[in-house]
Length: 290
Length: 189
Image (tube, each protein chain N blue to C red):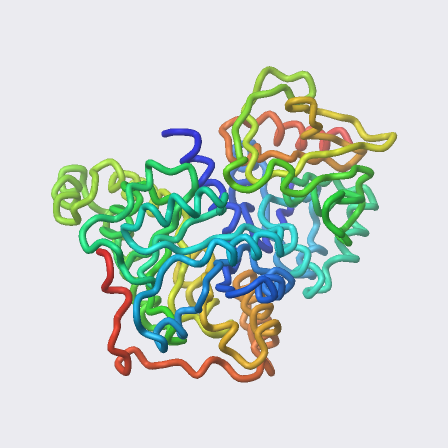
């Protein structure tokens, strides 16, 4: 394994137990850092607004990325469209800390994901199940997150995806070696990666929850289901009191298994994002890029 | 021997795995009352120092943690842990724990593309692997601080009495030299 890929996986290890927050300008980035975010995701529009605006959504303006990089000392991530390797080249030129090849933006390619092994910058990718997760890792992703259903404030899809990945991993640990060959074929994934899952009961990279997390309780739920950290997109800056909610979610991820602390920090957070139920929406972003 | 590992955010499990290999018990510290548990040493792991310090403040852990470090509990900080212990951080207005007489530079090697691996000697050891992830280094040390490792002239490990810091991540390697050194610090206390 090359050193650069190892270092990129290791940066994700440093993010564990933390909250990565979507921000759309330098001021929000500072609020997020001050609230305890372990990284920020620089976006022109948060997912809820991407849904509302419709049309094609693309990589952020490099100017915005640079402003946010200047504003904070924590890692700065940004999104590229699935398959859009030139957007990724541009972000790498900006020395971005992590690239999210994301279904939240409009896909640029309906077959091929980016060959992430060609890049020095690390990539995180979304997954709904073990097959997707391992395919992205084979393509060079150094970190995985659930897809969830971004911009909805509805945690159900993130729960489904995390449960699915965890259940499939538990099943792999009980398979015999010869059964594993067939399973690799079924899942369309490399045998070696599946063997790692069988032997370790976990992915070879860090696995975060994302897509629909809106409250400290949502974040703690995802941690108790096995997430190693949480992305929060629209949930913070679409709520009544972003700084307070952001900070509460940070503490919920640290003390995800202490209901007393969760009760304290969930108190009086102001209005949560209104959100949309998944059956009310026409566009399922999680179906993009399998 | 039991070592507490600050588990607010970051790579704390990795430290626990290293300690386990040395046959040392450890437990996670996520809230103030866990700082009262008996321990022979404490580790402040890698992660984001701003995140850890905000949680330390919110959960009323700062004074207690400072007191136990100042009272002589063997303390080992890696990367973010180094920043938490440094008296000053030259490019960042730090109001962290400030218990160790060193000046650190945050993100001293730049962003993730500046992260790197090296080999070097720690306290005259054989060559061992050093992993730097968006790492700090030590700009200068005051009297009473022993420099334990350098990479390209920069100070990347140091000790002041009960406090040990590394800018790099021994917990991400298979090499137990530095964790063993910390365990020896506790034994020779």
